Amino acid sequence: MDLVIFLPLLIIMGAFMYFASRRQKKAMQATIDLHNSLEVGDRIHTTSGLQGTIAGIGDDYVDLEIAPGVVTTWMKLAVRDRMVDEDDDLVDEVDEIGDGFEPRATGTEVTDRPNSKTDG
Image (cartoon, rainbow, N blue to C red; front, side, top):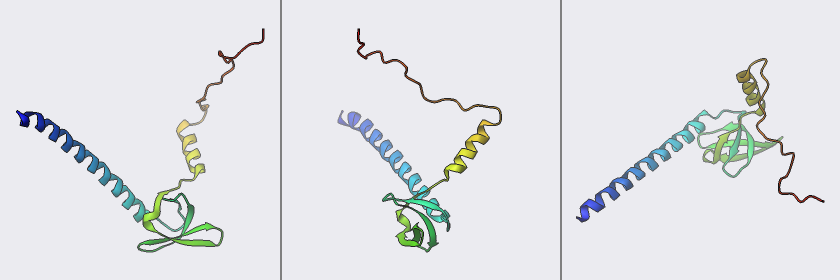
């Protein structure tokens, strides 16, 4: 009787652990792919939030230019992601929209406040 109750619990826990480890492996592989694809001149974010441009790359370290003439050395593991130029994103959006189309408004304008007090 105890086995009948315990077996579904074990199956659910096992499935949860399997999917959690699978997600973690995908994230780790994405990080490894990012580190292998870094090139001099790429703009990056570090795990501590610093933004910089890669000035040099070694096996385990990258040199980041964080201001003109200021170069610091960081471990590759500290690189969180590559920054994408906003101009490139804007060009891609315009290409997707195409000629002759107006961008849609995403916000709403509030013209009247229904809960406001009125002077009477």
